[in-house]
Every structure is written in C-alpha cells, then in structure tokens.
Length: 121
Image (tube, rainbow, N blue to C red):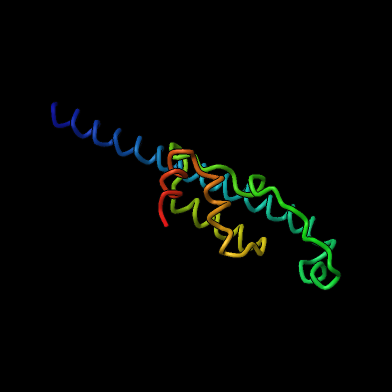
C-alpha cells in the first residue's frame, strides 16, 4: 500500500514537472512570437528608406525605441541566456553597432543587475 502511494506521488511529481516545463516553453514560444511580430513591423517601417540610402542622401537614420523591440528583462520569468540571444539578434537586425549594445542592454535590465554591469570595465 505504501509502495503504491509512493509510486502515485512520483507519478504526480513527474506530471507536475512536465506541466511546469510545458508552461515555461509556452511562455518562451509566446515571447519569441512577439519578437518576430515586432521584427516584421520594423521591417515594414524600414522599407521606406534603407540605412545605406539614408547615409548616401545625408539623412539621419530614424530613431528607434529599443524598448519596443526588446522588452525589459524580468529575472523572475525570463531566462538570461535566451534573453541575451534575442537581444543580440534584434540589435543585429537593427544594424546597431556592437559598441553601443551595452548602453541598450543596461537600459533593459533591472537596476540591480545594471548597476553590477556598470561597475565592470
């Protein structure tokens, strides 16, 4: 009887773990879909004039609100590795020079993490 209860507990724990993993995967997939949607919106906005055309015509590139493209990092819900990968892809897509990435990254992180990074060289 005790063995059956232990087996049921193990099975229940496995099911709960699978449910948590499934929920996390759904959240990640939803975020990726939102990023892709924003990327498509940006592509439409940028189709009017390319950065190369803007440079040759002496027109300033349009200013982009990076928070629309890369939401703030939430350490309670987000996985840092996935967040940084998506962050890097979005900035590459926008042709933002790597020398300016840290500025954008710090602005998208919680204050405690941003202060830690700011203290580093």
